[in-house]
Image 1 (cartoon, rainbow, N blue to C red):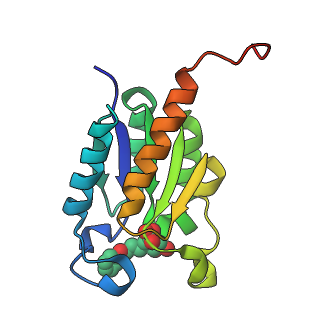
Image 2 (cartoon, helix red, strand yellow; image 1 turned 90 degrees about the vertical axis):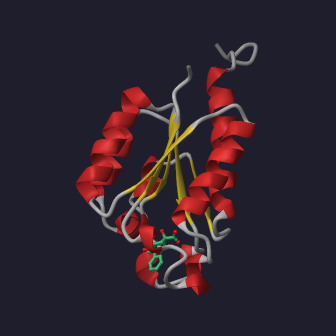
Length: 156
Ligand code: CA2
């Protein structure tokens, strides 16, 4: 059985669908987990979808991903903009990483324009709401396919 993609979600994302629908949409995190899993399954992949309000717990899960996951999709929420600990853990995991945000952080306050996570990520998806989770799974499927592919001729 192949390893799952860890889909990690940071602080306050458990409030989705309950507060601030104008910014973050009306879907709950449970709705998003379901649509993420369905998209992954259509691509022959599994997801392990988690949320925590605790920075250290996210760090522990990222450490777990080193042996337990094929890749990491992370919406670190506010920790995106503050956490060197999460950046260090992502670098140590040595897995493909996709940074994800529901909102377009670059249209928002200046303090959301800097991301520590970005320094460990292959790519970033933001501004597409819940659909971004499906886009991230598609992007991860491509990354994993490329990883498994033999090197092009003359480039071994
Ligand atoms: O757009 C995103 O996905 C964010 O990661 C969401 C974070 C924010 O700090 C980032 O800058 C961008 C905030 C998550 C808070 O989620 C809430 C959901 C409903 C109600 C209140 C907060």
